[in-house]
Length: 155
Image 1: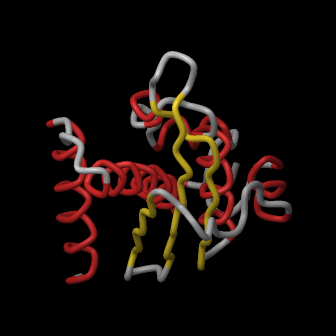
Image 2: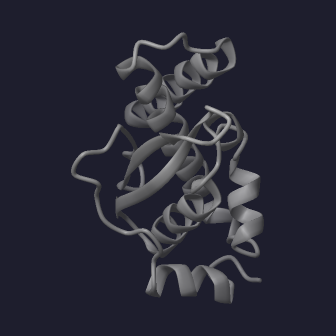
């Protein structure tokens, strides 16, 4: 894979993105962006409870303004998160996104970070909106996202 070549899975998710769009009555929305490259991702979640009473992602959609990799990573993160409990969805990281896409060019790795961050921010938003206690690890991820995106805005 050269610096600018995409795997067939990346191209498939770019050309035919899964779960594209918005959810009008979303339970949570997470939005992240990278001012350096201009990518902006918005992830919408519809949360329900499973038979065990655990909250899970019943539906997830995205709107992304960005390059092919940004759209593909947004698409695949929705596939990875759908029907997962919130706890399991929070375990999805950028390496999971990259693996699901059969790799990304090195110069596009930041897109996988944005996709994972958008999911984290949507779940964080849900916990805030529903006045639930935010786990320490989620608060830490949220603070890291704020710092990371702020630093990129300054550069």
